[in-house]
Image (cartoon, rainbow, N blue to C red):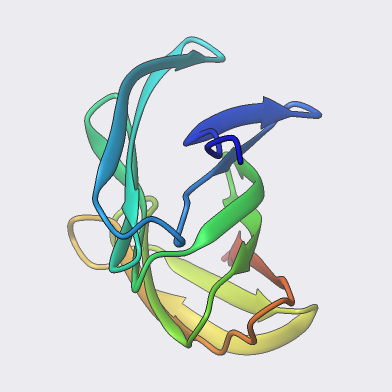
Length: 137
């Protein structure tokens, strides 16, 4: 069986992570849209950095597809074997509305470091769609 790629681009969006790995694997220097990405992944953790800044981190590890960032937020699909705590890097001290499978989970505010943490209910074999959208005003 071929090893899964740690990070790849599909339809202009990033896919990364491999929660099935028992040992930590990492890839540094992945160039996409003028930015340099680094991914670390295994069963306990999946982490993505862009230009040495945190973009995504989950505990335990997850598989992420269709990851896209805009000026006003980000969106992705996530799969995992158990519920996950996910932290994303956004604009600091800013309010965002979080949607899980199209349903609002409420408005959250990032801290001074721009981090936003959320708990996501995951079911093995099924992807959960997450969209985090900046609240205007």
